[in-house]
Length: 255
Length: 255
Image 1: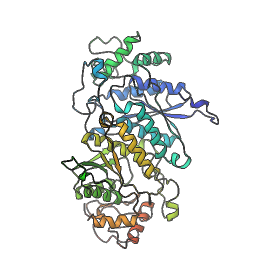
Image 2: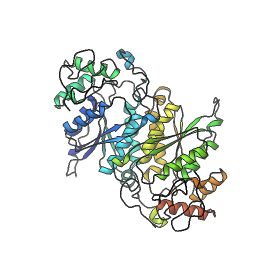
Image 3: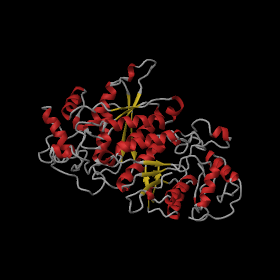
Image 4: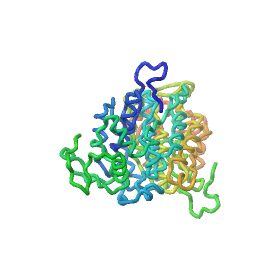
């Protein structure tokens, strides 16, 4: 928990690059960065993901949470194959919590967080930022290897040797993952405290795309991401503002 | 110097992902990977670089050196700004060897090798490869922080925590940089030993683009990359087959 705005010798808000996917976790992470005194720079990727509506949500989230800038980097990982999120491999549905948390799922995009953090690091160098915010979670992490704390520590070590600032002035970079130890229930409650409109987000790996102006996508309610999200809302005793496929859409979404 | 083909228990040639830029160093690196018994998979990036002819050269090099596959990943780093290789910042010309080797030059693309290696790591996961080949050079490295040996070691450490294979089976990844300790002179001579046609490569940061079928680009002869390359040929007492702007093009280039 580093509040960089309280460091001595800093006169303006320090900058942080925040990875924003359009999902709930990265929205809460972006708001946390702002709450900790950072001027935020949101970064998203158009990486050939099947759920194109994610990027609309990322834009809405960055705007709503007043990021100073939001860039979408095109990175065509689909050229390399290997994931249900970019290829025609089937997204698993209706898995139990035990199945979800065991092993690496087919929705894993090889080295995705490594690639995303590397690009974030490049932008941070350009901006003079030292902090990278990432919405990973070690509790409900769904078996992704690059969501583990040891991965984040290894990336910090790399960042400080990889950059011009690190080489010339010994600058240290920090990877901040404020949700790392939170359950999905706690994330839902933290979003409420931070005043985030979770109706702007999308977690589903396989949403039904509808007219984005009218109603936004309908979440499937059965993929790992939907199941984890819905369990979080249930355990927090809150209702998810998103429409799901197994229930009638109750309210239009705003963008 | 790891010759993976001689490891016990391996029945087919192990696979290696090789970063191929279209330049001389990465061509020699790709040939080295093949000479060490790897089945090679060439990876290039369309990252908004100003010298578009680089990608034509990368294709020609991968074909000529019989890579099993060659993928070009689109990654629009120009969205993030900050380098003379992607922006309208002027490429420095006519610098002395001392100037070239001091400090980080404006042609540095923030975190470029980190990003490229991360994507290579993702492809390696998909292929079941454990080796990543990179044509960096610690002697004539032109001041890029992410060409230093400590960067490569930090990336190897990261790779093994970042991947599904690392998390599940403790697989170790290796970053092989066979040119790390070679001078440009030694690289020119090694290319000759390996039978590489250096006329297929392009090192210039700011080439004059001409009809690629007819003659290929003309190298400027004055940017850091040209000066380092030309010095290498001079010291090796060989002549560079490429045409340069300050001399008449003597022979057409093949692609």
